[in-house]
Image (tube, rainbow, N blue to C red; front, side, top):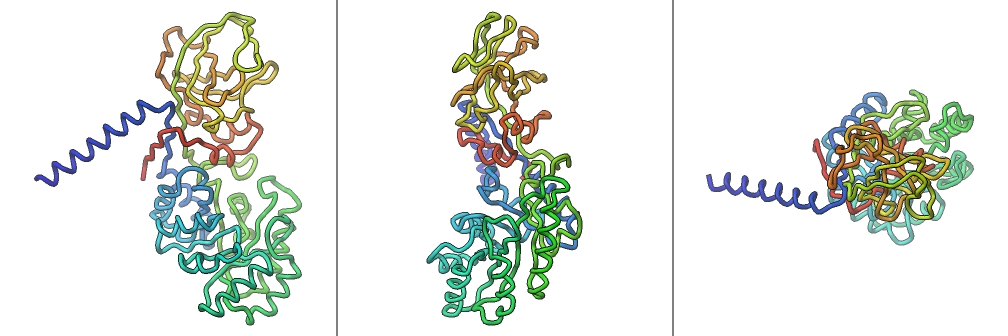
Length: 386
C-alpha cells in the first residue's frame, strides 16, 4: 500500500512539475512517438523483403534521439544510422543491441572508439579503409560499411577505387558488412540522375556478392523494388515530412504551439515590426506571439509588402503573420476573428491543425528537414504515444 501511495505521489509531483514548466514556457513542442513508430512500420511493410533501417542523425532530426530511438526499436527497427561518432556513442548507450552505422566515416585516430562502442563506420576513402584495416589486423576483424560515390561527389569511393577494392577484398583486415551509396535527386520525380545512379550502384554491388547493399533513402524507398536492394534508410518520411515532391507524407509527427503575449490594435497605414516591412491595409487587431527565429521560426517566413508569409491557427482559424519575424517574437493578424476570440496566454499553432513542416518550410524558402532540425530548445517538449 505504501509503495502504491508513493507511486501515486510521484506521478502527481511529475504532473505538477510539467504543468509549471508549461505555464512558464512560451511554447510547447509536442512529438508523437506513436506516429513515428507507425510511419516506420508503414515503410517497413512497403520495403519488404528488404530491411528497413532508421536514420536518427541530428538528434533524430531534432526531435530527440533519447526518446525517438527506443520508440523505433519497439516498433521493430534493428539497424540505425547516425552521422557523427558522438551520436553513435550516445545511441549505443540507449540501444545496446542495435546495429549502428556512422555515416560520416572514420575520423583519424577514432577506430578504438568505434570498436569500444560496437559502431560500424561507413568508410568512403582509401585512408579510412587503410586505417580501419590496420586497426582490425591488430585488434581483430570488425565490421564496417563501404560508401561508393555514384555521382553525388560528396562522400565515397570513386568507381575505380570500388572496383579495385572488390578484386582485393580478401586482403582487407575486415569483412565489409554493407555497401551503400546516396541518391542525389530522388526527391525530384523522373530526374535522369536517379536512374543512372541505380544502374551504377547495381554494377558495383554485384562485385560484392556476399555483402548487403543499400541505395534508398526515404525517397528511394518509394521508387520501387529496383531501388530497395537489401536495406533501405528512411529518414524524413519517419518524421512526417515529404520525401518526393507530389507524394503525400505519412502521419504528422510534430505540433508546435506558442503563447500569445499581447493583443493590440493598429490603424490602416501603420507598419508592423522591424524595418517597417509591411504596412497594414486596414484597421487591424494583432496578436504578438512568444516565438521567433531563435526558436526555429525562420525569419524568411515573415510577411512583407507584396509577399505573404507563414500562417498559424488561432481559435480554430488560420491567421497570417504580419511583418518581419524577430528573434523572440512574431505578430499575427487576427482581425478576422471575433473580437473576444483571443486573449493573452492563448495558443497559436504553427505546426499542426493542417499546417505541415513542408508548408512552413515552403514559406521560408527551405525544406522540411531544416524546419525539424532547427526547432529551438526553449520550448517545453511533450512526448506522447511512447
